[in-house]
Length: 504
Image (cartoon, rainbow, N blue to C red):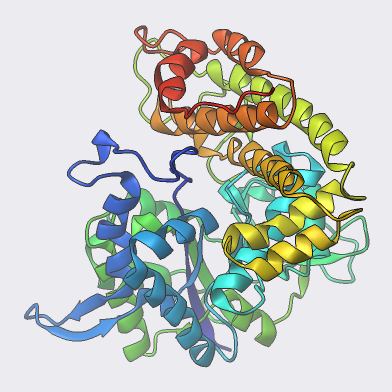
């Protein structure tokens, strides 16, 4: 019987690029850095790639790459920015995954993520499919291998999402303990209710799906994960190690996996020098033979599931009310001021859904002139997003059309595909997560919606902007100066827009 330990880090920032310039505008709240991506890279992403382990005399005895020792995912849109803006950190992360393959019996430390952090249970099935396909393709492009697992944004889950993961050969995902409904030993009909969060988190669970497919779920240790995120465990690596080791039962009757999952930003951004505590904890546990450090795929190969689980649908790790935080005034907030509410979330969700549905009809009608399956083309388009200069990929895209395309037709198709890309970016979860619609993240998704509207207008005579912004008047800002979503759009989004191409 062995003790195994796994730490998962969900490293992620929302896409922040101005959709017209392709660059991140200055974000004064991130001072002294230019923007939050830059600041968090300095505080977290880069330090985790090169962390010193100190002895009792505060002398460096070793320098480690934390990414090579832990399970992790990094958002595709963050990696895209990092490749350009912090290439040394980017290379260190990719190298860490390659190094981890030797360390973890042929399995890599990195897992994939649904592309732009869309709340999957609130997405339609086409978007669920594209988010998973784009997440996989981005992973393969960067890490040069197929992903075994995939992180779901905010761990938000429903059966439809799990079906899509299984359809695309994702072996496992990671959920919070409160997302488990019931468990049973494989082959038994005796199901035990664990909806109170009492699931045994120290083993993998098989989840059987209505289609007949299966996926494995690891439910992380919620108590310690919360203590790491919101307590003082990262003040001392030994204390963190001892807290983790306490979780193993005595006597140990079977091999056990103690594992935690947190935002990767916990290790250095949310907790200064948290990367050093993480590194020392792993070093301390290994040098004292307290447990074997592993990752999910390695553990799963050694110890396949003996139990199965059913999930509670429409749940997440960061909303007590399921997935209401991304569509309603559920009460979840960060630092709610007196008199504030989040009624604006409902209007924002409904307005974007209205726009999305109009864009769907327009896209299908427009693209069907050129292709038999417009949605298959959207799924394939990520290859050009990842490598726009690849003429071979462009030729493949044009060759699958009904006929030889003119230069203007190719431009129209590219606009339609970009329109759909922004239609997905406008659902990035951070747009609803914070306390007011006037925040950076909500303004950002409004900018993506504006770009989608503009591209639709450039591709046809229709213009949805006026109705879109009028619908936003019901999204009342808690900041009286900002008034509502319409005013925010006019003040913050419109000035950034480059002139649209008028139809003749």
